[in-house]
Structures are given as structure tokens and as C-alpha cells.
Length: 252
Image (cartoon, rainbow, N blue to C red; front, side):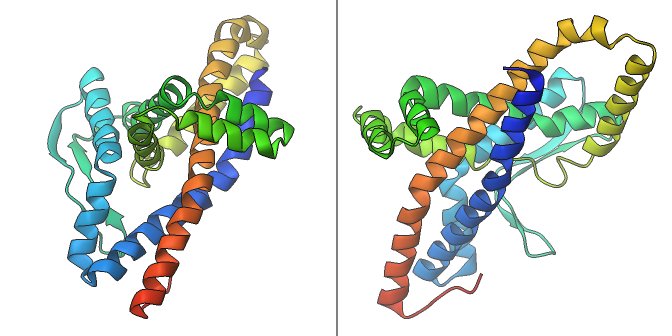
């Protein structure tokens, strides 16, 4: 697969991934709020559900900072509600550094999460046949592949880990803060290489590794979409049942 095709695959998976992930987080918070009728308790339960994913997210920040020689301060996995009403499940405080290292620290959870998702999906749940069935539109094959993936005794544990990690790996707004200047710098370098005619010399060395990295991320996004497509109807049915039983509802 060429670099251009890999980027196209990544873009096409990112489009549905973002709204699906937002739906999952909003409605799971809503379910816990309906069950407890207490914002603080609902937040604690919601945070506990995603704790493995949050631990990997913040742990990858910390490890990347240490690898780049950046000093860290407080590390927290305890949820905190922000002034704008959003919920922050954890954080790692680091010293102020140049935008290159800051961007890499912010990118770490996405890279670690994608690797974990691909490894769990391919080795523990063997979702490859499901993806092949989706590619050719084989509905029966999709169902058979899902059932086959859940045959192992520990498959539900791996499915849970896959779900919470895949829905916790996306960078937050603060994680993306340094991405724009880094993108501008890389774009300027690319333009300069093109202008001096060095692109044909550089691409053989960086093109395939870059394409391989993009493919891993796109594969992880595809697996995440598949998992959420399975989980979302279950979450919706649970929420509908709670609404009917309690007479309460959440306005999102």
C-alpha cells in the first residue's frame, strides 16, 4: 500500500471514529448518572470503567517525557471536571519545553494505544476475518467472525480492554497544542526538499516506514470503529431500559 493510500485510509476511518467515540463517552456518562442520580458518583464509576485506558494514556505521556529528557511533576488518574464542563480523566504535568518534544509527548498516547489495539485485535481476538468480511460486504461472514473471536474463555476480558483502550487513546486538546507548529515546520522542510530536488532521494528511506506507521494507526482506528459499532447498540438498549424503568432521561 502506497503512502497516499495509507493516508486516505486513515482519513476515511477518522471521519466516523470521532462522532462514534463522542457518542460512547456521552451515553456511558449518561447511564451512570441515571443509575446513581449523583454527578460525583457517576463520574467515579465512569472513570473506573476506563481506568486501564486512562492508565495507558497517561503512562505513555510519562514514558515519552522521560525518554526525551523532560522533567515531570504530578501524575493523576483521578477524574476532574474542567471549568468548561468537560471531564478530564487524568493528567501528567511536565516542564515547558520546545514544541517538537511537546508534540511528541502529546502524540505518545495515540501511538501506544494504536499498537495495543492492533496487538489485542489481531493476536487475542483474531479480528482479521471480520475485517475481510466487512471489506467484501459479507454480513454472514461478519457475524461468524465476531462469534469466532468471542469463543475463547478470556475473550470478554480482551474485548473490554480493547474497548476502553481504543476509546481512551485519542489526544486531548492540550495534547494537540504543539501539533500545529510541528506540522508547519515539517511542511516547510518538505517544500524545501521538493524545491532542491531532494524528494526522490529522501522518499525511499522514509516513505515505506511512514506508510507502515500510518497503516498501523488506520488499522487501530478501523478496529475501534468495529468495536464501537458492536458496543453502541448494547449501550443504547441499556440506556433505553433504564429510562423506561426510572422515567428519567438525559438531554445530550
